Image (tube, rainbow, N blue to C red; front, side, top):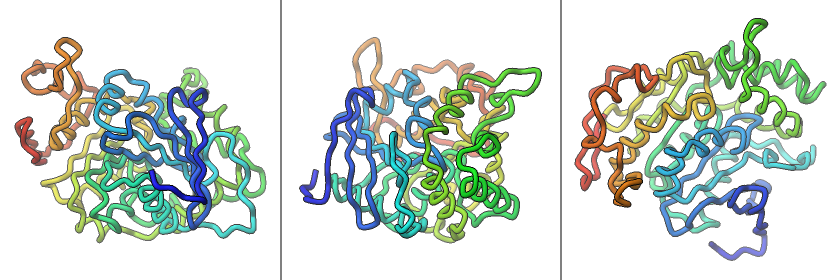
Length: 353
């Protein structure tokens, strides 16, 4: 980690279940980064959606034992919170300029330089997926791969613009009110999770609703403003050389956006997984559906989950360990796009989709 008189590292192990918080002063304000794992391992950075931090956006995935085994065995995790979205954040000074998506992207570069990270694997959800994709198009030599959940790549549609404007006005005039939380829950989750008069709201939605109360409305408003003014980065997708794995719930309001993005990526280095009966936040709603696709994706980098029986670095979910019936879309809870997939041998660095 680079020495910097402008950077402060604060130990928060008790709060963050073994993680450590670093508050970093960038040229565009301070950022909170929670680091989990051995910093000698390859880095994986995450970036969440609007009004979320890693506890709200990625906890379900990292609390899934199989996924945690896969990711923490192979990576050191750097959870980046958008400005003012960390736990216990104070309201950002109204005199501070509202950052653009370009500014948020450049903050990530400063984080990588602070920790002296070379190339990184990236995982982002919705708005966070857009920020990391923009980062990958600007700094192609710093990104080895993208794992994107319900990603955005176009400028807002009229429908999204209307909802963003509604949420911006609610935030500005009423703060984190009940109607705003309903709008955000619709953005994140399927109707099955949100519930209805006949079906009670799920524990996931209830927990998210409570945690949203802790957000500073002005900080959320600033992130939403940046995303609402985002440019279309479709053309930049053609320049990406890193592998990309996209997850999207078939009930996500960003479903068509993910399909559009997949159509613009190089099919040799990208794959799309549609998860049935799921909203945008696959990481929270159906994290188990991400496991096998992620495992095959990471095989292309020579990364595996350790076997619980032998302690071997070879994955128990590699082809010789999986019965064919377990790979059916029905058993995985997935609807896979008809993309031809070839998984390379364990010692190869190529995986084609």
